[in-house]
Length: 122
Ligand SMILES: [Zn+2]
Image: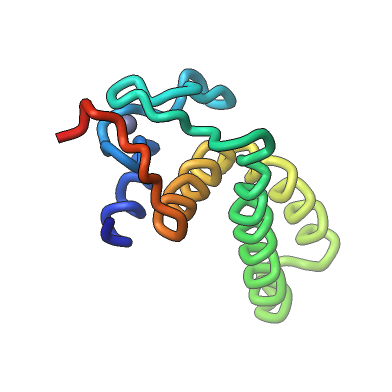
C-alpha cells in the first residue's frame, strides 16, 4: 500500500486497511475492530504503546522549536514561556492522542503489512 494513502487515512482517523471505518468511538476510546471491514486494530496487547513515540515526539519537537524562537526574539520572557510550555505539554498530548494512535496504525501497516485482510474488502 502506498505511503501517501496510509498517511491520508491516518490523518482522517480511518482504518488503514479499508480507509472507510472510523477508528474512534469517542475521543479516548477506539473500536476494537473496524466497523467496515472487521480487521482488529490492536494486533497484540500493548500494541498502541508505540503511539507514544508519535505523541511524545511531536510534543517535544514543538516545544523544543518554539521555546527558543519565542525567547530569543523577545516575544515572551522565560517565566511566561515556562508556564506556557508546561500547559502545552499537558494539554497537547490529550488533543493529539487519537491522531497519534491512527498514525501508529498507519505506520505499522506500512512497515508490517497485514496479510489477513478480511474478505469483505474489494
Ligand atoms: Zn477497515
